[in-house]
Image (tube, rainbow, N blue to C red):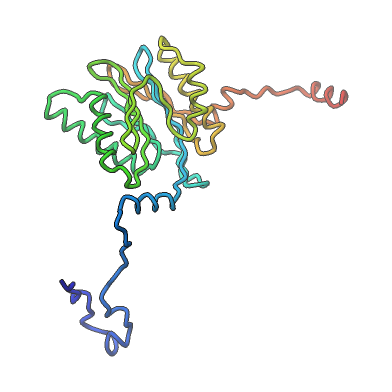
Length: 272
């Protein structure tokens, strides 16, 4: 079948014929298509060639009052910090939150898509979808796009009829249930603080401080994490944002500067 390109031809050339003016304009448009018999392998090779460099720190844990969720706000493009104000905790519905780690566009789009599907489920069944159901729905969607270049590492946290729920879902279709997770390049540092300070019977204030401190220490050690440490609480009445603190200010909150007097400085110099 021949492609009709008559609509692309110029009907009123400026001077002389179109061929004399610019031969490329009169030629049929064409572009090269990659020759590949295995499209999945082609996608994997392309992804490996691009070598996306990303960084973030997100965490969530269950305690006696509900679920605490926290994240930083830095977006990086390789060694370049592209933004310090990214919203990495996404509201899926009034009782459920999702965290963002990996590709920003992938995470934002699929969380938005999940929010639509959760709302349609609520309208069809006259009840909110459970955290288990929402996480399974997202895992099934991501599994269907497995090997196509998506980069998603998310936590689905919320409160339903059974109480608090927390799941980890990734772009390979993996899905894990747990009581505490941390995802991103700064997660090893956040886990160190979480594991040492976590107790199930914490109050909301204690849990919020633990989450805030874990995000701060991760941003202090991980160059790809930073910006603002946002902390959300999910309880029986839905989610609520508790705080959003600049990690630079948190540094001086946890490690206050103690000014030394002039006499002390002179005594140190004399003793040396």
